[in-house]
Length: 252
Image (cartoon, rainbow, N blue to C red; front, side, top):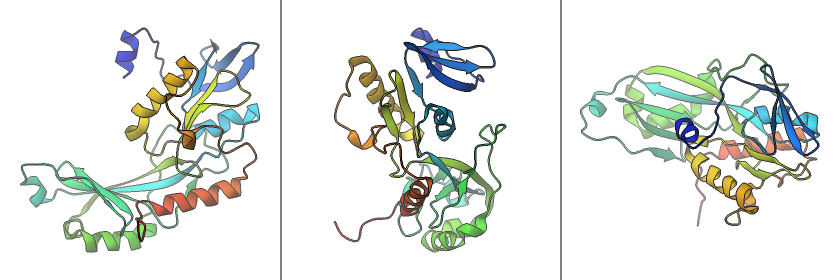
């Protein structure tokens, strides 16, 4: 995507963190250690970092991170022998997703009691590292997964990843302009960015260029939470959304 953007004339700079953001007359200023950048429009696509970046502007964004585990198994002979890939599975009984990873399985667990990460502030030296795993919290979910999928139970665990995952109180991203902040746009709060980034990018780009969204999608508008939501309320809402994971309704 970066290569395509450069071909179309965009300039892409990596490893240039923004230390501060403020408005100066009719444009925004982004302070970085390599010099300031001025822009008429700024899109905040900074995941859970957005909360701290925007706080000096008086904006209270309910963006917080939970710890999310995924487990990768050793090679499973029956999978290795197959001439096709297994379909991905979402299981409401376990509250997990499972897909093929090489010749093994990868399971992402949605815990009933999720644990938050860095509520007091994101460490300045954090650069998307993984967090220490704690599979004891996953015991009840893993027991159900072994019951549901015997091949998982028989395989050894090769790797356990634990990383922060960004959430909003309703589990949907924040897309669109921030009220009373001309030229400031949000594209944060994605917990599955790789699956929704393309459509979200097109939706936001159309809004920025045409002055209005392509279609009504008020459920993701960046101003839907207001500015007075308490941290306690936001965290309680995120707990409920995360714990629901892939739950199915009792009836439709």
